[in-house]
Length: 418
Image 1: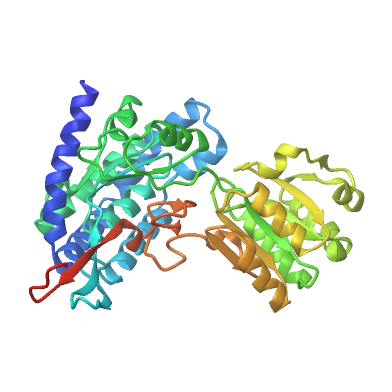
Image 2: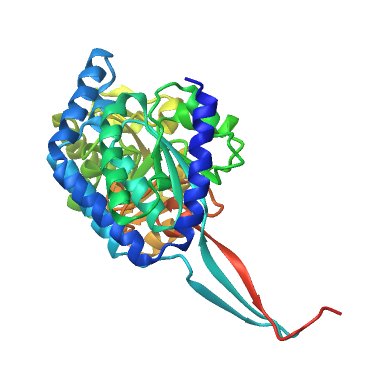
């Protein structure tokens, strides 16, 4: 197959579909999403069978446990996809929303209108549910999408794609509104990220190496985050029971996700009261602990953390722990070593909570909540196409509004500029 020609055809078809989608009504888009949901629900066994092929191949290729966890699809996972579709259907349509700016001295009247981005290319690894999340959000925001999942999930993605295509056909929207790159050759990624004539933005979701490659080679604008080195800081004013509960959930709810805690910071004043019990709970869950000197004195025989541990995204049952003098040191540590993804403080002190909110430079900053909540579904966005740690256009979980832009609209009564 000529990969370059194949990807270019996808781009040509997507550009044409984007023009139709930009004119589609809210009813048209919601009808398509409902039809897609119907086909997903009817095709459960076909989806699970396709996923079994991917899982068997992944085991044969000796892929790591974190990737297998992300790859696995279940009946509950399909229920989650359907719930995500229902949430997206329930959301207001951002397209066409008007923001009034006001009248200028010249008499011209200004406003802004929210519009689709056009064609969105999404490159991701492992998780089949991303196919539905990305397709539904792009469709609702009036964008055509080209989705390139990882080679390890090719059978799952093809099965999901069939449901999407059938739903689009039933609803009378262009089949090419959503297109799956059904070749596993890595050249397809290189072609997508340079297809400036047809693709308006690229959203990469995956490992650090994938995103770093796309960041270096892409000619199409990208929305990205490189990694998720998320922190929980247990303040000297924290409730110990709450702190243990939140730290355990932030780390052990799931390991191979970008919003899992990778580094734990504990205020010195509370460290001797909380760290022994907390580390015992982590040990029960078979989490490997790597601590600073003070942590090791308090806890005993755990590994010594080295400099690289403070900036590491493990995506595994490994946790670095550091005792800090105060909230100022915690904030400085997070801003130096963190990835600007998600960071949480556990405290009963309102002033410290506000200090943390104002000074931690991350896309999600939390007070007394698990980092695992940093997610489009949990934020009520219906789903997300990814999490952006950039500061331009969209930041944090990228939902419907992040998949649109705005254009200036100017009304006049014959004014000319003098």
